[in-house]
Image (cartoon, rainbow, N blue to C red; front, side, top):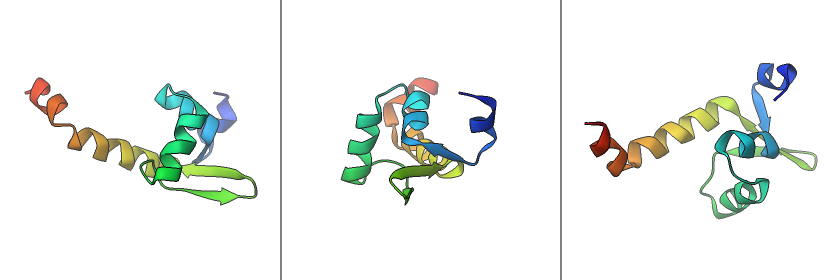
Length: 72
């Protein structure tokens, strides 16, 4: 990612996919099913707040019982 995109409190679908090491289409499917981080439309683009993505990832990590057991 470029320096300007990391300074922004928002991420595009493509940037989020890059962070999660998946495809933008996979992010769109998660959003459509209500399973992804909360985002909002700005014109034709969907933006995600970095804080919301961090909170969503933390919740996913907390819900992963196998990962918690492996860390203990």
